[in-house]
Image (cartoon, rainbow, N blue to C red; front, side, top):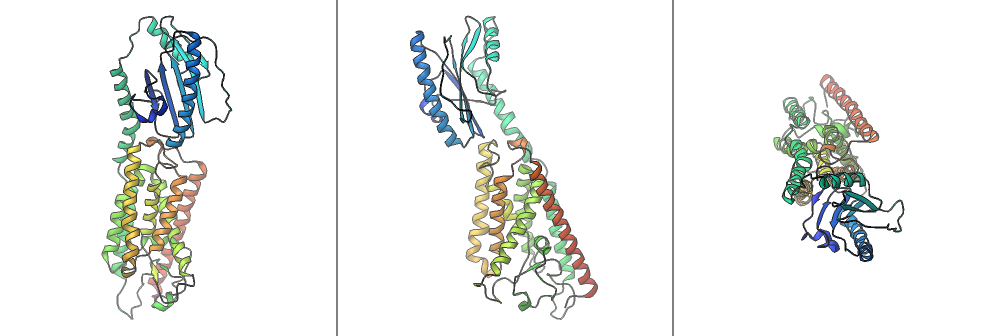
Length: 427
């Protein structure tokens, strides 16, 4: 139980399928990229019948393994059948090196203190040497654990090996999330104290702070002549909020608090920051591209876009993919809860805004673009290894660091642009 991370299989468990009731004791691995089963049975006393019985069991186990691969979404299924009595002879089955179902058969003889293999045993399951050592120990008088002790070991394994790391991750302080919220608030306070609402003011406007204008209509709305679709605005616009309405920065900060902290705790700080920046850019690209389409006549639609909601939508898309392709070893209860939460957020922040977004200036293109990009990233990047994911690959880390570096350069450009607006004024 503790070494191979298996869980006791109740003989009434429907997941056993066609193996239900055929084994004295069974333990399985029900989730993750690898399915596994170790099952013990009493062989017939007659050697001829024992061989026929084993052939039938092997055929049923292989069919169960193939069915388990489809249900669990695992890549391989390792099965070990252990006969509680000596088996003579060998068994041959037609297999190929790439077979996803790896079936092994062993026998243990407590009376003789011996064990052996009939079919080669799958890797990462008890070996013949281990079975023989355990059998000899029992033969020499070592106490055998009761079923209650086995059940306790399983529960401790689940609590300590499966759930505890996730619980520890969920109580860690998401300092990067707090930092991003602080940046949003500080920039917004700077906007509110420096941007004048007077029509003839030469103080910096929202575009001077790095907001992203529409593809072809910004000049029709009286924005600064220098308010062009510069490349660095695709990043800087994610940190700018409405200087007139406090609810914009307030709602985005609350959303980042609840969504960003989940991403930071489950995926880590590098994935949080990289995903936020990449998906914010993706959302803005979709909006600018859609604005260039002929169906968007000049002077209609949003003139300018800003806010962190595109990147936050990307984080929602990332959470929506938890456990589907990456992180299949994350406890099922955690993945279901997080995905249900992400689905609820999507309904509230995307579906509903299609009904009311036009009247209150919500950029649905940025939301959808960020959400889709986040889903793609979630299919590639794994959650933390400690909670059932894996470590980031060299290329994955490189791409994330590159996105952060490019974004840092973009924010430098935005800072220089703002400084020039203060120095020379914005018409």
